[in-house]
Image (cartoon, rainbow, N blue to C red; front, side):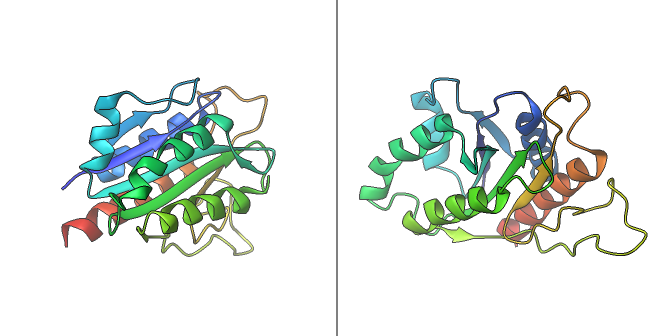
Length: 181
């Protein structure tokens, strides 16, 4: 059984998030290049995966154009329902606390549903207590998908936060535990 994390990252923040998901899941990273493309080997990894975790930064309230190009290219798999019944999940990162990340997660869910995949959310309670701190688990309160925030002027070494990265590891562990059960 294999978990593939397929993602695009424009500035390195989403890549760092993808790496944390891979650490938690023992998954394989497949990076969508800056032209929005994958190699044939990468497509083969996706086709043979048990679970596919989609990741994209949120740009202007949606996935990056590179991720969208990948998603459009996946229609060849859709036509034959090649990914039907695979486990799917997703994550995103944006510069602001909200950044309309929910729109990106909704898009990823729709992509998975069109492929006939089975979607998994975070199953993590939000850090919504008076004494919650930015580095707490699930500080951004994502349920349907993994959320992270990286200030636009932060380097990839500075962001996402410790809490967002630990949340990503926990998300990866959940998906791995599910497919191995």
